[in-house]
Length: 131
Ligand SMILES: *[C@@H]1O[C@H](CO)[C@@H](O)[C@H](O)[C@H]1NC(C)=O
Ligand SMILES: *[C@@H]1O[C@H](CO)[C@@H](O)[C@H](O)[C@H]1NC(C)=O
Image: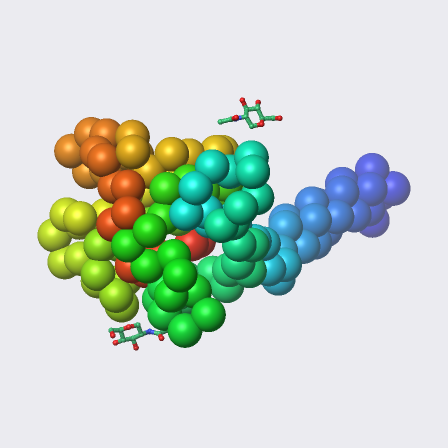
């Protein structure tokens, strides 16, 4: 085997293992979002909620203060969170949901399927996934 051929085989192998490392890096971290019944900046009525990818979080139990009361949210970059009008993260038609990506949001003007809607005081459940 020529040394040139050995070198290119090694380069190829290195390329393959680097690619598999990237693919194995599925979300192992648990990011958090901040949800508030009032202004994001006055942490009054705000709560940091750790999110697990694709898990539905009902605004019940310890989060029931926020049910039908959410006004603002802070979503970390790289996440997309869908908020639902109903419990159970269910909306077969995509109606009565808003979809928030990384940033600070007011639910009074939130992106929905057909354009921005006023979703203030409406969310009852949400689910987040990596973008
Ligand atoms: C909240 O704080 C950020 C950063 O300090 C600022 O850019 C933003 O304008 C504030 N928003 C409100 C609604 O006060
Ligand atoms: C959320 O609420 C719905 C409707 O009450 C229920 O079916 C579902 O199991 C709940 N999900 C979780 C994760 O608690």
